[in-house]
Image (cartoon, rainbow, N blue to C red; front, side, top):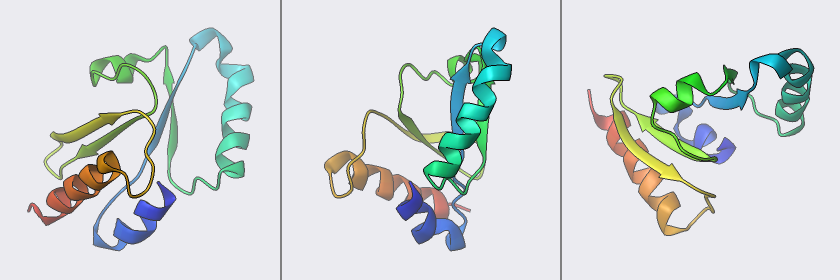
Length: 104
């Protein structure tokens, strides 16, 4: 995601990360997520989704899942699974990002 962020951020792409955490484990899990984000150089916002409420509302079943949301807030593309740069799913994601950025 860092490569895509670097490539498209100047054109308007905003990258965020959402991780599910059990409400009962929030106090002990939050520092672990913060450490992982720093270690992975995730320079974009990383949100904790208590009990997966947001993910369920977005229709996400499984991780990782990549979403492209247009400027109007509508989902334009969704891919579940590992992305490898240059793969067909990666190219489809890039195409969706291009379309989302071009849409006014």
